[in-house]
Image 1 (cartoon, rainbow, N blue to C red):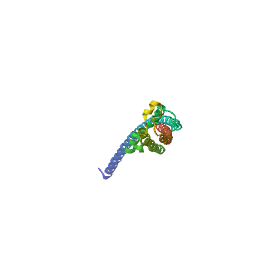
Image 2 (tube, one colour; image 1 turned 180 degrees about the horizontal axis):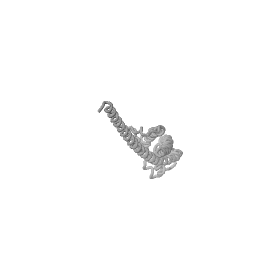
Image 3 (tube, one colour; image 1 turned 60 degrees about the vertical axis):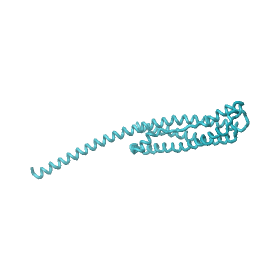
Image 4 (cartoon, helix red, strand yellow; image 1 turned 180 degrees about the vertical axis):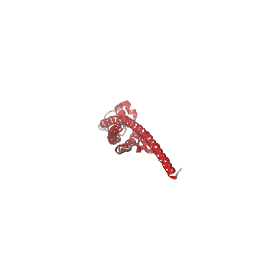
Length: 218
């Protein structure tokens, strides 16, 4: 075989190999793209479900906060007035000792962050909205914690140290220091209003982000 034919044959083999590698690489990239697209869709679907579950929890909290604020508004005018309230007063006060919490469904989001798969969401605005939403949950958690601390450290202690429950049998208030209780209820009113504001904002954010994710899944 002449050198010219050998060179042409070698060049042809090289070209065939290059074409084969290129085709294989393209097929692999297509397969990866399809896998990434399915994974992204699954992430978005799970995120939407998580956010809808969060909204249900927050909506329940919002209803409870409204009820507790109503109780505070009713208690403040009658505390330290000498009126015989007895059991109704105690029941209302005990209801204020109960507090609502919020535990976000954030497993999907944490998985996105820890695995590095957040890059699969190529819509920058959507990605920013998702990150901002869960950052806002941290702010909500701070407000909830302040209210919980007030209930535990002040209201709970008051119910133990400043109450004579035997007075209930005579129709009297069981609380021995209603001035202190009134101050605590006023402080609770402030934290309840703060919780109400951040809870409403979180519900709105859930609605907005849920719509954006739904649109991204189309």
